[in-house]
Length: 306
Length: 306
Image (cartoon, rainbow over all chains, first blue to last red; front, side):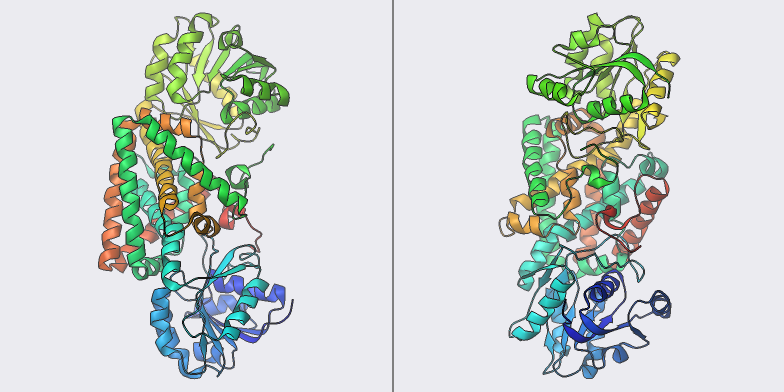
């Protein structure tokens, strides 16, 4: 694969940034990758495991001379970082991010972007329940989607280069406007996460069902919720605070629907339940056909005759 | 491993029964395994793939001479099946089941059990989103829990033999009383399933987010819900109708908790959200330590450097 950028700077060295580094190296997509993390401990870990060609002690040092600057910090921290690095950005450089929310990030970052620098917001739809600099791996983005959310007037060449980088890292790329992005993600990611957090919290609270029972007998459904609910707390706090409107809208729809099913249970309406559960099965089939999950039973966790 | 029963009869040939057959064969746990399914199509499939040593055209034929009869039909059908086979059970035989709900099954089945026949309800906590006679595999129960829920006055020898069978199939065995079983499962399985069904239903309904977008961008959380929501509709309808009280109780706790988080989002209470999300993370760690899931990122779906 061809080199896309001479120098890339990763600001924040968590799961996404560390996966980007290994993926960029795998594809030979950049000449040099610099990195910066807020804490000394993370920078030391990064140096120890060879994460980034050069780990810098300041964000300013990391972005100097960079052709692409990737903001990989929690959504709530994007604005402050953008303000700090803005005066040190190379003319003609591109700034992008990997935040799970787009309208709020654009609002926070765009005002700081200097004349002559391009801003192309992005969101790779990939992740695991792990976080931190040691959690990344080169294959994280393979066959996953990365959504580019260019703002009005964005330079087409800058967008095309960023697309080439993400494709080089194995992702499929789509473009979307910010508001629609935030609504789609509220459905496919943000609300499911909040619900999983809630269900795990309920189990934790319940006095008559001891923790050890919940944990021992988690195989049938609950453990999938716990994986989702083990995701990074800071990242998710920021997601909900910054995608408030769309999340609250989908939550409203969710509780309305949940109450309808709850009523069917209470009144013994088996037909309603059966019809509902039959309809949702078809969606699963669509996801497997779209290549976004495996059809192996139980996620391929165990052995299988099939 | 030693043979536990001379002859085992499986009534109903879905995921659990077919996995039991392959697992019993793997362990040499029974001399002969007979099987019966309600539909001609399922019986034909079973004969074609070698599921069961002998596939019978009636439940009565299948249970004749059997030392263990396993009811593997949906919870709502258990009573009728028990009534039908009762007069044909061998004296001294044991009847068991694999239903996800225990109080309702005991209420439906126990009155039909003849004098001199033992009834030991059971519930293996294992499954996948697939169903039907071709979905079983020998390893399904390995390192999973099987809960035995013996009724008052149950013969200890009968319980011990059933325990030996489940341990021979790779499961860990615990005993529990029916009401506590139904509450624990409402937390760890039934309510999570209802919630997953609801979330997938909401996504399906939403007009502004097309189906194809939901499916394409499902990687970040939602696809785990769709797996759960792809489970067998008949089985789950019966679970909710027969474990009504415990499910409604846990649902009540869930919505109470969800509203508290929803309020924190609306009012911008980031500390509450962060604390909550931090607490739920610890539960995940407990489940991995208990050996009920893998620590591989993303369920080990993708490749990994870790």
